[in-house]
Amino acid sequence: MKNIMVTGGAGFIGSNFVRYMLSKYDDINIVVYDKLTYAGNLDNLEDVSQDMRYKFVRGDIADRNAVAGVLAANRVDAVVNFAAESHVDRSILDPDAFIKTDVMGVYVLLDECRKHRVDRFLQVSTDEVYGTIEEGFFKEGDPLEPNSPYSASKAGGELLVRSYHVTYGMDAVITRGSNTFGPYQYPEKLLPLFITNAIDDQPLPLYGDGMQVRDWLYVEDHCSGIDLVLHKGKAGEAYNLGGENERHNIDVIKQMLAVLGKPESLITLVVDRPGHDRRYALDNAKLHALGWEHSRTFDKALEQTVSWYVENEWWWRKIKSGEFREYYERQYGSRLK
Ligand code: NAD
Ligand code: DAU
Image 1: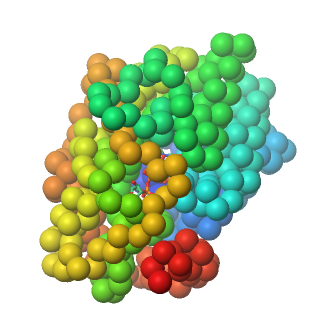
Image 2: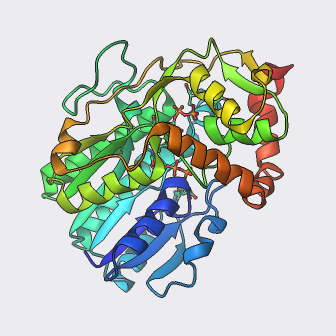
């Protein structure tokens, strides 16, 4: 696997993955293929932009000709697909783009990979495909019961990957990651939104009672898990990739405020997200069997993440002054009134 195409590589996890792979392997070339939607940002890749082993091509995974061109021109051995519409709240407001990218886009990408005989396809999926769980932990063989347009479209994408393996014998693997946090995360997601709001002493709109449980995974650990499955995963298999750090939302936010030195009075309970999944939890045994371990504790990772947003206002202030304002008003305007 010398030539890797990273689709969606200008987003949060994708850009961290590119950095991770370039620093871990010498003998590798990476072509990032990304549409640069509102969430795609070349600032995320600025520090690798001069690396001779890295190349960027702007394009849509649903554009068959463009995908075919990149696969052929770069003699791609493996595709790691991060490209997606990724935010649950936006999928509730406007599901359209989710179906186009997370289902149709995955289909086009898979189909071209098959035609170009790409050696391995890795689909970056999510724990949300299982739906919610009150007690216990999801295993890879459990049924998929997605509850939001986002998770349903991700489940659709996964099922297409499965079908390409079973029907055409394509070498494909799937990772199901849990709630990821760290540097370069678009500030619509819980942690970067609340950290940057808190820096500005703005309210933190916590949905419902704030007692939902998420399993927090540091982005570098998400990247190392994907790398492991890419190299050692068994074709046709899915792998849970959980943070093993279950926390109630309200506790995560209180801990973040303590690190930042800001008051808990910023927390504002607002009308809940419709269909809000109560708890996600994964059994990671299959991934551990490949040799995966965390790189640091949740406390350490949270401290480092808070520091990164404090030290990198140049990165998030630009974003929060653009398209984001309109979205924020639409999503939170009436909730915060
Ligand atoms: P993100 O929204 O930050 O980035 C998505 C990237 O995909 C952006 O660069 C965007 O421009 C690009 N993109 C969108 N539509 C495209 C298209 N049609 N063609 C080409 N590029 C397109 O997302 P993220 O948080 O980095 O998530 C990356 C992947 O990981 C997604 O597939 C998501 O479902 C999955 N995932 C995310 C998390 C999480 O907590 N963030 C957890 C588990 C899985
Ligand atoms: O579990 C993996 C998934 O995690 C990924 O597949 C998604 O791409 C990613 O966006 C994330 O989905 P969530 O919906 O869990 O993440 P989000 O950051 O939007 O919300 C985390 C929790 O915080 C969730 O319970 C909703 C709550 N929340 C979120 C926002 C944005 C709030 O209470 N208030 C908010 O303003």
